[in-house]
Image 1: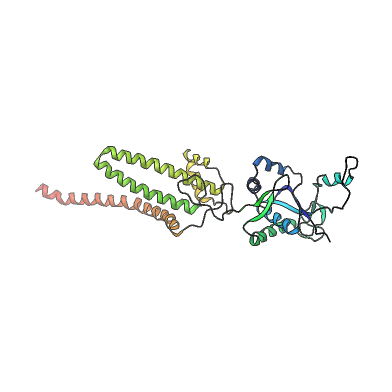
Image 2: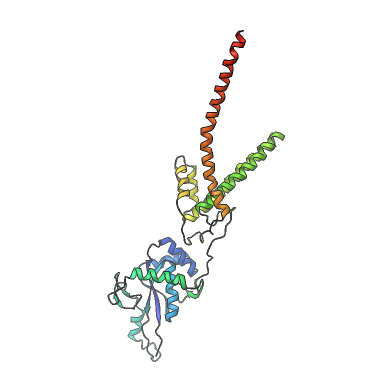
Length: 332
């Protein structure tokens, strides 16, 4: 008995909660293709990404592409019969039928393979198709290996791996505009930069005592270094959200800059890989302590704002009382 063969069909639809741009980037990376060729897959027409697959191979394609965000389906291939070789004088009519694109108004149930009109529920087995695909993708992510030796191409028999191995977490680079950092690490690195700036500022003060020129040079170096490092970690924070680093220029706009800085601290990053790379690694204890130190600085600033004026008022009252006590001595 001949083993059943399958094909993987894509109509441009996305998995639930998948973003279009993210899916296109994922497909371009998995297929090792340019963005323009990937755009052609989203025309709405059904495209067979891979044909003549065993069921196990088709399941691997199905899980890999669904994890990338593309809603693909597995369809059984039409059975082929042995026949004489075709000649120029004799072309079977079946060839034209099999070469015709599939009906875009029909679909196959991903569970039982039942052919029916497009719908959210299979009329044969009764499954809710969206929920079934989401559950199947989740199970595949838990059981599938980290890499799959599948070859793929948007338009013909693929030659490259569909599931190229990807690191679980991105590499941390402080002095770079590539990569991603989360909110806690952004606060921690900012506090570390502030401590470093305080140290350099102290050196600048000592240098000014020796020579004003040395103090000026150190202050200029401190300002340039703080700006460069601030831009680098700010760009990485925006990459974690999935935004372009050029949006950091909004901080230069009055009022808008203050609001945007608050947004950078509040908006969480994407939990999965985006177009800027894998998510950052978990925060270390040191990073968490540095991040929480911002709260301590904030509280100390409030206490200082209250205590310093009160202390100055106390000194003024003490001086006035001392003058009042010494006034009779002057009159005598």
